[in-house]
Amino acid sequence: MKKKQVLNESEITKPMPNQTHEIWNLRFLSQIINSMADGVFTMDINGKITSWNRSMEQISGYSAQETLGKGCDILGCSRCFGNECPSGIESCGIIERGTSETKECLMRHKDGHDISLIKNASVVRDEKDNIIGVVETVTDLTELKNAKKIAEEAAFRLGEIHQMGNIIGKSHEMEKVFSAIKVAAASESTILIQGESGTGKELVAGAIHYQSHRKNRPLITVNCSALSESLLESELFGHVKGAFTNAVRDRIGRFEEAQDGTIFLDEIGELSPFIQVKLLRVLQEREIERVGESKKRKINLRVIAATHRDLYQLIRDGIFREDLYYRLKVFPIQIPPLRDRKEDIEMLVNHFIKSMNKKTGKKVKSVSNPALRLLMDHSWNGNVRELENAIEHAFVLCNSTQIEAFDLPIEIRIPDQSIEAVKTISAKPNKLTKKELLDLLNQYKWNKSEIGRQLNLSHSSIWKYMKKWNIPLKQP
Image 1: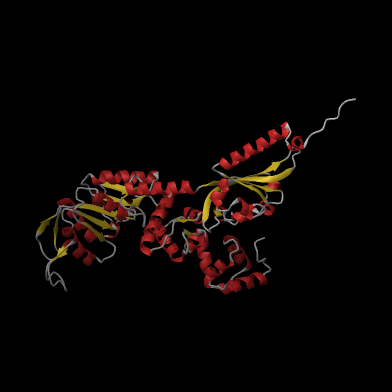
Image 2: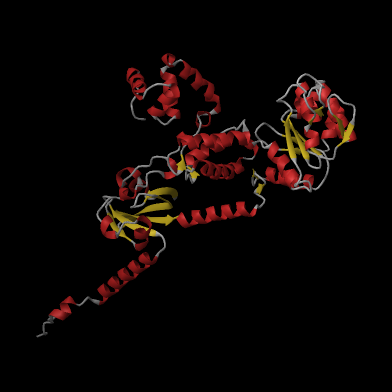
């Protein structure tokens, strides 16, 4: 008779060879996951956290013990690119889709600050293809963004191609402007700077002067559109005592003040025919006469002129002298409008934020992605000056370290074609129609408080209109 095999206690508790291999594999896998730089955690089919690696502890501030058995909403990843995202496995759609797109999010750290990260998730299936849970990976972008910020600051400090004087840009169009400035600075030619209002013509003039051999001499600026003909003549050429009423003493003009330096004549297209003739003589003879005397005075200076107007069209209209135009246009520089170099907007915004931080004592670090998208989509008819004013406006309203979309001026927050419509509605709120309200609700993502601000109405008034017209209080 065959003897019956009996296992003693030690043999019973000792794992079988295949069990030992399985346990060893689990321990090895656990060590691999815990050694990863990326955060990794898993959830069961009900959305409860079942594992939490060491990197997740470091990134989030939560220990494994604090998260196990809780929902993923503990992370507060609800502001991906500034939009409200669903929180929790029930509403995010991971079970239905089987995977989620890799996306940049903001996660709320245990101590309350936000962390920029990239998050990805996918379901886990058993051998029968049944979903048994979800695994998510998290990549912390903090160090990368800090490194990028340090690199940008270093580039500004070193005065690389992205900045010349106070002119900032990295676009191809601005590289051409920077090259033109360098060439102009090395010459003595008369310069004509052309560009729309707000593009930075005065900054270009300053960059030319301060890179030239005249940099230690005066840079004198005259706005030719700000004065009447008689006052501008006196301002430019000076006058002698008794030349006209109130001329109680001799006064030197701006041309003489700029001796050995540079004179910048802004808005040159606004000159009267009489002043055009006198300026032409200055450019040809390099001498001036003060108002009220016939003595000629030699001057040695560089002339830089600027205009936002089409001088050639003014010539055809008989408003501007053709001979003066060609005297001024020895070396022309065309400054592109901001809408043609939108890749420079983020760099300009960062520059204005730093400048406003110094002025106000605030500690704003950046603009949110939705706000940046609005800035990129705007037409910028006022160019860089308008952008600077927009950031200054945002600083008045901003109470955090980041400028949000609603901190920006109304003309940037709404499409250009809607500005007049909103002005009309806000001027006559009692004429508000259901269609207009629905359009505004869709435009402002059903933010009733913001719509009320635009229409000068209270939040409750907007609510009453919605109730009157059976409009749901929440976006369908």
